[in-house]
Length: 404
Length: 135
Image (tube, rainbow over all chains, first blue to last red; front, side, top):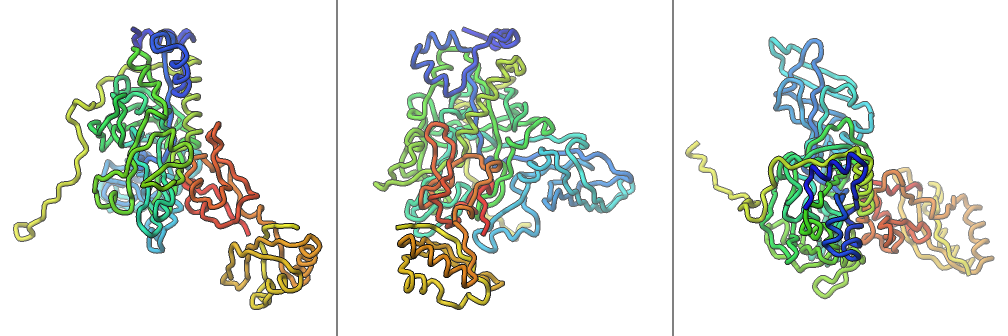
C-alpha cells in the first residue's frame, strides 16, 4: 500500500491525514478497514505515566582548574549522579534520592525529592546546585567544586531512558490484611482498590503489538520535544501470552528512548513521589504509527474492550516472584471505575493519565499536520514474539568464599 | 436543620476544656469527629461535621468564638494545585467520600471540595503531590 516515504511527501505538502489512536477506532468502525487504511496516513498514540528506568546524562563543561568527577562524587541539589564516566560526564537516574532522605525509616517514607524532580527543574530552566568532590590528579588537580548550573549552559543534557513505555501493565491489588505501599501506589487491604497503569487504547506499543512500524530509530514525541527509540528497553519480553488480536495480555515489550533534554518541556517530565516506595519520573511519550497496510490500521484501531491485562497480588505473588495472576480484565472494564476480583467489587485507579495521553496524541498529530514532524524508517526492528528474546529471572548461584 | 463541616482551632489554654460537650449539651448539636489532633505547640485542631437547628447552630458558633476557638469552613483546607495535578486518578479509589472522581468524558479527575472530609489520604499518595492541606 503506502510507504513511509510517500507519507512523508504528503506531510511536507500538508496533505497527510492524521488521526489519534482514539479517533481511528471510530473511523474504522464507520468506514471499514479497507477504506480507513486508504484514507489515513498516520495514527498518533500517547502515554503519560511514571517510568522508573529514566534518567539523563550531562556534560557540565571543564572547570578552571580542571576537575575529574569520574571516581569521585557529583550531586545536583543533593542527589548523587553516576560518575563512572569521563571527567565531566555524569548520569542522573530518576529514582536517586538525596543521601539524607530518611527513605523508609519512618514507614511509609514520603520521598519528596529525587532524581526525577531534579530533571524536571533542569528542564524548567531552574538553576540547580552542583557539588562535587574528586581525588585529584596531575591533569585534573581540583578536588572540590560548588556552583550553580543551568541547563542552557551545559554542553550536553540528554534524556536517556533505558526502559519506558511498557506495552501493557499489571493491575495491582492487595490480598493481605494490611495496607501496602508499592510502585503501583497505596493498595488497601483485602482488595480495597485495584491500580493500573496504562493509557490502554492510546498507548503506543499496544497499538502496534507486533512492532511492525515501531523500531530502533523511530522518531517520537518525548517529554514535549523530539526523541528517538534507541533500542528495545530492558526487560523487553515479547513472548508473553497474547490474545487473538495479537495484543499481549501482560507486561510485554518496552523501548529505550533518547532525546535532547534542552528542547523538552517541564510539563511532560515530572518528578513523582510514590509513598513508601521512592521517587521516579513521569514521562510523556507519543509515537506515530504510519498506516502502511490494513493489518497495521486494524491493530491501531484496537479499543479498550479488546485490550486485556492481568490482575496481580502485590502483597505476595509479586514480591515473591510467583506467577499466579488472579484473572484478566480489559481496559474498558478498568475505566468504569470498578472491576470484579474474586467475586468482590473493587474500585480502580489509574497511575497513568489518560487525559494527558490524549493531549500528547493530539499534540503529535498537530506537529505532523503542520509539516514539522516527518516520520522515520526504523533502522532495525524490535525483537518480536518469534525472535526468542525473553525477560528471564535472576539465576542465583551461591558464592563459595573458600575459592576466592 | 443545618449540617456543616468545620475546622476548629483551639488555643493552648483551651486544649483541656470540654468544649464539644457543651455544643451537645447546651445547643443540642450533633457532631461527628472527622479528625482531631494536638500539635507539639499544644494547639488543638478538630475537624467536625456539626448539625442541628439553624438557630442552635448559630448560637453554638457564637459560643465557640466567645471561648476563643477559631472556626473555619472545611472546604478551604484541602485544595488541589491544578498546575501540579496530572489527572492520573490514583487518588480516586482511595478517597472515601468520592470527592475525587473521574469525569467519564474528558477522563479528567474532578475534586468536589464540598464532599471532602479532610481525611488527607490523597495528600501523601498523590504522585505529583498536587493535593495540599492548610489548616
